[in-house]
Length: 277
Image 1 (cartoon, rainbow, N blue to C red):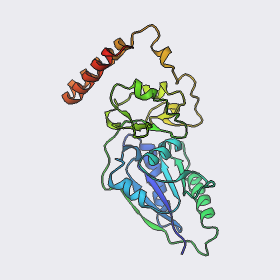
Image 2: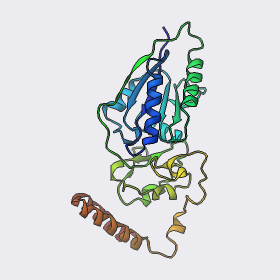
Image 3: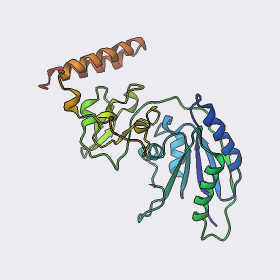
Image 4: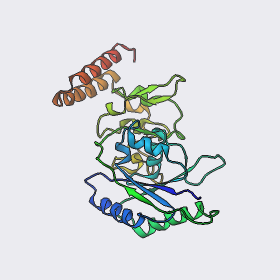
């Protein structure tokens, strides 16, 4: 009996009415389609990696088609960071399943996207005697809260740790082998993409950023985004820059009543002040 291709439809954020209409149209036309099993989930980027929705995606077998408002590279590495196994697009020499990531945006054509899904499904079922019956769509029970954190393209990351040394907010850490770890993703300051600009390899993405190069668009130029730390600090004492950043962060933390995070940032900058920079 042939297996269904699992289609994951990631809900756009509420302020994106055009993409929501596209998502609803696709969901209606995909429901019950032979050979496909459709699941609607909250915005993938907003999901907790250890939460039940990501766990249900990890348990899926076979190839995946993921429809999301994020750029395909950002969608793929968001899933990989959450432990969803697979390779981007066509299966290579490995036995990993394929994860096809298709972007939903206001200028996208629903018919063209359906055509892409049909072509993917036809290749997957080429050896089957009959298509599997279509699955019924599952709509998310509750929206996720909106998050802001870095997503790492592990194929680009060289492990230089410039992001860890630059970030003041404890977002980054290292694992037991000395590799880069997103230790506290939700400690990241909303709207701040600074670490993506200092990454020498352009490996750090913020999928909800307005700049396509930072958001994960493979076709966008990285020129003007990457900054060398020596250039960034030219003519300025790093501790002064850190203190200024600290003051802004502490003011925001105080306004939000987050005194514990403010104390942590204060301690971090005090440690930096004691370093021989």
